Image 1 (tube, rainbow, N blue to C red):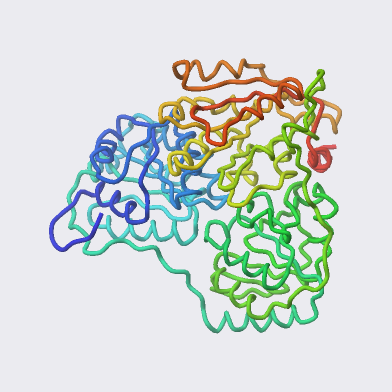
Image 2: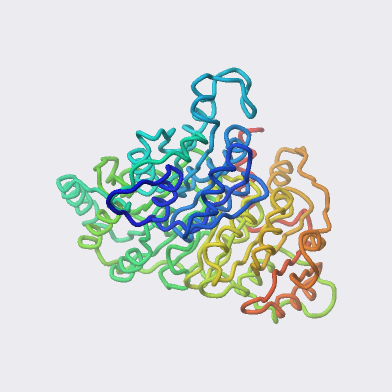
Length: 560
């Protein structure tokens, strides 16, 4: 909404206008009795489209995928039952650092003021339970009144953008329709803040630490992606000849076809060549890296003496923190003082198996060792690649992606069922880009409904379903401790799912049990499919992708 002098606007339209100022063009949600009025406002608003979802959980995952390619995602849900359904996805967003605005439409101001016992409450006359829950998974919250609407909307949206994390806005249904003065100016994105004295002190400390460095390296996480620092990181690596490794959440930031890219670092589950670079660095610059006290996926030896750690709004050198300093400012300082690395490093080039390299004759079963290099050969520059946790996570870690691929993954929080709704949301935001989704059978069983939305919107993703008849990661842990944990699941007819959701001809389905069948399917996949394509790939339940056996041993250790 373009600001102007004078006039009035409803609170609902004020919020939509501010979101539009920040680049939002779609909102995801599920209608309900409390949301009907606001949903109507969305439908009538010029410049933002309503996108219905099958559940609030899926809507929020879709907003997550949308935010990762468009900048900011929005979900609309109703008080109580609706907003609680989205909380798992909101937790994903705060952990994975994804900016989502959760708009919750509540009962009227009078009903809330009187503490009435109402639907979607605990019938205990306390309507603020869910605000308390939202505080745990959002970085800013507000409940709007006409008097505070403009100030609070701008405050919360500024926090969402600055911190690149989710926020919560509750609007009583009557407030959404109340008129308030129209703002005189558009809402602009806040600029990052750096204290000049602290930035100078950081530069001095970093230069002292880098002076004698012979084996420096760069490890990137997901925050630089949200801040759009890909070009700056690429320029730094090129000028100083540093090797670059990435954590799984940080994939897509650095061009993996670059000779300086060494691979995905996942602690003890990483390839030796990658561990040698990261763990053997005398100075390791970490950008938005996720540190854990224990895990089998992202562990980094946090010897503070050898780490320069850049966060969103601070920096740390050998355990000493400086701030507020924006990540872009800190990287700029490093660019000026970092040494050029003269020594080389081991190559961790991932193998590539073209479809023509697969066994064309006989009945050779599909193994993870050959599946993932073959799927790598399907990817093209500029694709959007969505990968599920579990089997897909480990398989994708072995692949080297083409330039310009955007990666949608949520491995830190690790909620299963993320891929299909996130792929749908990304497809809404960027309909011109090809979407490749790789899910396990367990993940697809949790959120397959959003395939219907893909078909409704005329999207043409390529969906690979890795069918190993269960939750492979839990099965692997169970094997380590000598007992199962209910990891088996019903074996669906996955190829029949699209027919449930749409008419014949709008999709294509394939199933591969052997390398020969997979080779034929992959050879026939178009550069730009003209319909949704679902490929079910059957693998032996006992076969594990590279990295999963090491991880399962670590994951099982505390239980033995």
